[in-house]
Length: 310
Image (cartoon, rainbow, N blue to C red; front, side):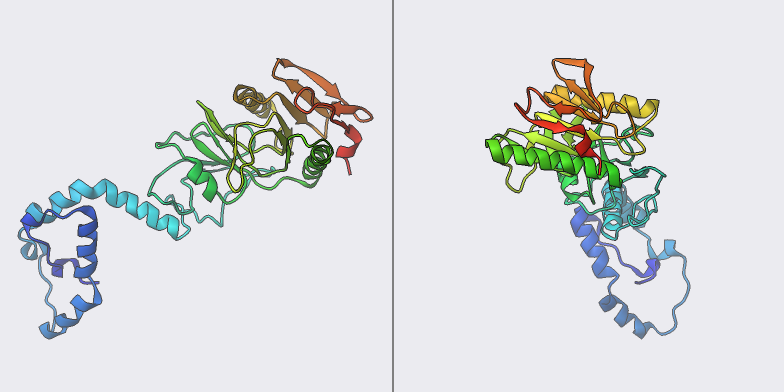
């Protein structure tokens, strides 16, 4: 690239747009422009202000008008390189000791627009929230590197779960799938599927297992909430903050139209807590040796609690 003092600027009356200005800069600093400079012989150090006699009236005003857009372009360029604008590469997230990750920053994957939005990696406890505009959209969910939800204007990324919670969720899905095949009702949905909703504080759910009665989404996300949702606790889903986050998410489910939410806790004697939209604060408890249900969301379906354990 040419030294800055040797780069000619466009005339004052050119009034370049941002795209034209960037293209002009690339042409001005390209190898083709460097080659003829060999005829100068030995380069002499000069005061840039002497070479840029009209810089104050030509380049600086243009730069001031487009500074924000240029900054967004730099952010997008870093994302395309897999680098968080804050300096962290996407392949080096900060991890806590729990089954879900906690990290803050701008999503490091490419977007179709150079948009800055918050991202959070964490367990169900909503800690260290970031408020940045504009809000991430379903477009960001499509590009998320793994399971994610859009909550409180943030893209919440979830790490893979542990063996026991994963086994329990898989068994619930398998039982629901057998029910749909036998009855022809609804659709059994496994882990890492997205349900689009329209709540003031939430745009999507991704339960560990679910039962859905809406239209076939094809290659798209499910539209609307499932009638039955299952949340299996991981090792980081304990403590006062986690309990509050779980209750908040359950209220979101009910506000979006879900009828039944299972809170599955493999470390508790009360393995399954069945919460119903009709009486959200009162749960039906099922322990080992019991047969659990999800009435009225999944009529006639039953599942032994013992099946959740390998």
